[in-house]
Image (cartoon, rainbow, N blue to C red):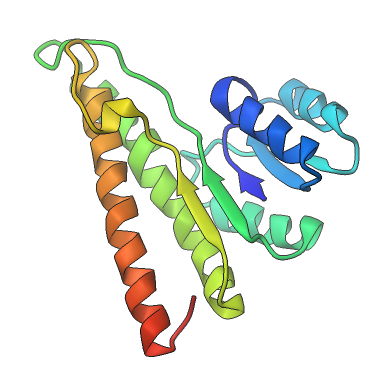
Length: 172
């Protein structure tokens, strides 16, 4: 399993459960201390890799490294993200762009890096973590909601694309 954003919160909990179930988990983190703490959870099974998902040029290397470290990545959990709390009217455009970069564009970069390996093997699962905020919008987190709505659409379209290709015999 390859999982982005395992240093805290839902990502950490999901990674710990995967480890408890006997999975080897390559988890991405931004800080060396967090990487060491993650690997200490289950030495040899918890494999931390430093990655700021906004460094999309580094993503393919981390994915290739995960394939080497644990073997075939059959599950991607695209979890890295954060919430921007501001009214839509007052949110600075730069912060809106950063919200979409992290919560949408970077998740797409990770799934694009993993998908060719899965297609080659004709198997795999991609879980894009969104939230209830990707289905229902709330005041003060409208930009966050928009980023999560976007990932819901990406996930829905991707599922149809890989299903169609699988039927045609061109991949997973």
